[in-house]
Image (cartoon, rainbow, N blue to C red; front, top):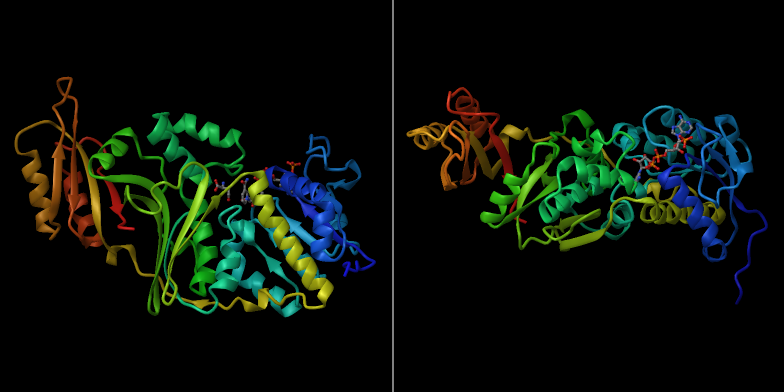
Length: 437
Ligand code: NAP
Ligand code: HSE
């Protein structure tokens, strides 16, 4: 039987028309007929809010949609607000206004969700509207849906994830093509992967925001953003890739979550992972989320973590979902499935792991012995140690590499502080955690 279309279209306002917004408009316009048959009504873009009226937009964006007036974009002629502008304000105020006016919201804004997700979800539930955010984590990977729906019958025990496409792209280019950090970052920016402020990517904060959003669903947790320990990729250099390879590892920027009963361990940092790991060959802009469910066991999701069209796929899928719920008279149903409570975090000093340490030191007698003895005083045992070659120029430092046995991060930190006070050390010691995944 032919699908019967309802008379009235679902009217959409986009807040933002940059990389993601442009992709959303293109996808809706290119798949117009198909989407109409999936929703049971036409998806009609009515307003596109931007800052600059004169800027060039994707060709599918009609001139008459463009406005700089938020009152127009949040007006009575809009059913679904699609927020793809980013940032905390004014996005948050627009969200609140849209929810109060009974509009469903679709967003790609992990910063806003990581900072205010629980209160925004609660407000949407009270008002009986949907708040859908698939594109906020993992770009085109359906990870939010998977956690909210497919894994609703199980407990997630651990998450190991590559959540920032820009960082994964940079690390891959540095490792495989030997390009500098700066060149690789410029490439990622040109491809539209990076945030408008790319320090959010390379400092690890973008991945941290995504981990906090994932934790709302994976662990049912409300987590204050400032409590999650975070490190970026700016200090990794070619020598680290060289030595990681010699020890049988590669370097990835990871977001890690572990359910530890009442407490939760969350952290974001670069890590050495075995070259045979499931995440080791997830390269370039790809993101990967490796989950372990109590009953399910391992589950790996991989896909494009950034870029206009992959991200647009997630945004438009959410638009289809919320439009359908609205038409069926059940808006807010999937948002009501989200349940969260405050969960305390395990402090980093209580974490145990094996560690890769690099000390750039004077090439002099007794240096290795002194490092080993300070580590030993803090109960940090050495599994492997390597010093390659000698200083090429008189006075140049040599790198000393150490892999530790499993030890407490707090004790290792005390040892590194003591080593930092030694005269033979040149520069800051490098610490990278080893994740056996
Ligand atoms: P973008 O290219 O910088 O685009 C931002 C858009 O929002 C622009 O059109 C801008 O207007 C508009 N805008 C910003 N502030 C505004 C304001 N105060 N009032 C009105 N319009 C405003 O950003 P993007 O890369 O598309 O990212 C958008 C969101 O998606 C962010 O939350 C980002 O984290 C998220 N995201 C991005 C990706 C990606 O691959 N890029 C992937 C997943 C999620 P003008 O054009 O006039 O300046
Ligand atoms: N800047 C982000 C990244 C965009 O590189 O992953 C996707 O959220």
